[in-house]
Image (cartoon, rainbow, N blue to C red):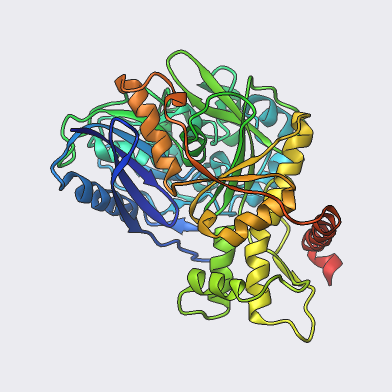
Length: 490
């Protein structure tokens, strides 16, 4: 039997699946990862630890003795790092997508009136989330790095580039269009690195990877157990999850519930609106077509529950916080706005800060934990409403995937808040499966994504319209308080 090895390199763990010719998962392996917070606004990961986690899940899969026909990769997006092109040695830690150290750079760009250009060329607004501002910070704060980058001695890459460089022993330095689209250096209309954008950020073109389609031949692996196995797909994890639903038609909207969350819906073209509160991006590319998507990025959802569990001193922060939340029927008016790193879509407010409000004498830890879980669904509602408004179309249902979707209460609350059905994917591994499906198409195993539809479980809304809008209005007031500047709060 021939199988596809799908590697999903995420923020809190790296997973690998072995997928057969019918799209079924035959084996699954996982390896945890740490997120580092060396100082305020700095969020990092050890790139060597990331490679070790990748090697661990590969070894667990290839050790089964099955024939591997292809490798597919999905990865955490916007996380970026630098390494020596000759030796492959990392230069410092990776700056994760949650890292806010480039906030000052973004403020300078905004003051210089660059937002219109960036949005027109990249579909993205100005925010420290995106990779280019992080790289600009790195170049400004690492002695000698600019000269080495200009000389072609340095690689600047997202996690797909780092993994493929490792899997090919440095023979391939590349990225796909979906990951490149999240760097704010790719012109999403031409699918090329944009010289003017590189000048805006001060990033040398010599340090950037080759651009490839998301589905197609990249290179052959050389690491143990995968010798001569081709890499046939690579794309960002949220894009891969969208592909995992088995549809390439415009209009389907999904939310991936992970460390952060992403709402994404396929669109027919890259129609960029200057005043949009969402991002226009490349969903994925093949040799014959570019698929575009509209997206809303939410910075803290699952990580907010973890933060709260740690804040409360719980032994198992996430599991215990979720159990606490389940012990009460609602948050009793308590709201937790997890803006510890600012707010993403649709607010895009880097200066916002986390707040807890609505406390009363009878409030308990359980109510606070419930507020953290409910904040996931409330933030998704924020982005969903704007996506519907900007698309000028009613979205009939929300597809949902990711680890947090195993929480039935959260899925029911999400359906209640939206007043629409929520269709939960019956697998937690949709990102890896989506990458595997694109690799399988490149192999000729399947003709299209529609050949492999995703099975789902359905949650129907039960909350009355008046209660739904009352709950959401109270949340909107809490968000407004989180967005007040410190001098106003004082």
